[in-house]
Amino acid sequence: MRPAAARSSYVLSLGRLNWKKGLDRLVRAMAYVPGVDLLIAGNDEENYQPRLEAMVRDLNMSSRVRFLGRCVAREMGPHQIGECVCTPLIFGEFRHRGA
Image (cartoon, rainbow, N blue to C red; front, side):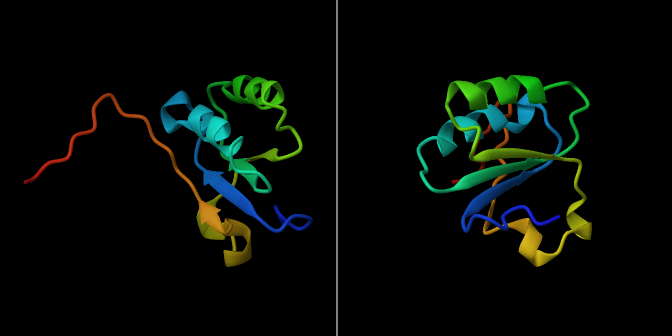
């Protein structure tokens, strides 16, 4: 797999496709990052990809977002991981503990 052979800059999201992963937020955020592609890799066991694909189309980002399907990080080489790996997560509550 050579995810970014034709383009120089991209962000990779690696993990299962699920609303809890915050991929909808990542797709919307990437609309504000011109010249950078988004590669989304992971299993879609909950049929979430069609929803993300519709969002990508609505944002006119079809040329910048690619769905790679299932990938295993430990089997990928450094050139395949990407310049930036982003894992947005959504939790019910997130609190800083400490001082």
